[in-house]
Image (cartoon, rainbow, N blue to C red; front, side, top):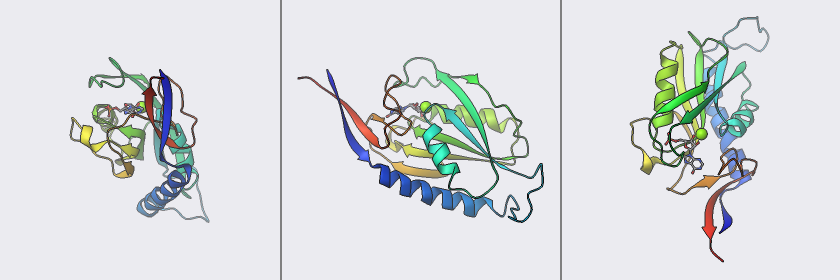
Length: 189
Ligand code: IMP
Ligand code: MG
């Protein structure tokens, strides 16, 4: 079996979309954070971007560079029981946040929403810590696959039900470093 990757979303399209989303986030949070470029006291309210490892890494770092506000990074790692492609709905947190998010503005960053079980679980987990606000930002959304009622506040691209790799997304830990998002197919020849 030979792997073939067909481009679905080019690096340029991703770059433009990242800028667009960063613009929306900046607009939505600059007043909320009371950001004033002339003074940045310690302990000032920050926007906390919570990256879901490992798929959300590319998206988070590219997006963060386009947001001219005080931003902090947090990382969470999770594992789903069973195969990733058959989301069981049971999500185990392997690595939790380093800092408390109580009374902070938080955006949860995901590579892709598929059935929605992962984000649903993580959202409930984070809401239990009473953040000032919690929004969800996902690069890709396979809306037709949804099994639980959860949606992102910021979405890059709604895509059909293909298995995609690149720009953070993997197949067996490979292809995350592709600068574009491609459809992965297996060919016999
Ligand atoms: P959900 O819990 O079904 O929404 O699953 C979301 C997770 O499944 C994502 O964070 C990805 O890790 C993985 N996933 C879903 N679809 C794809 C895909 O097309 N390519 C790579 N990973 C995927
Ligand atoms: Mg993932």
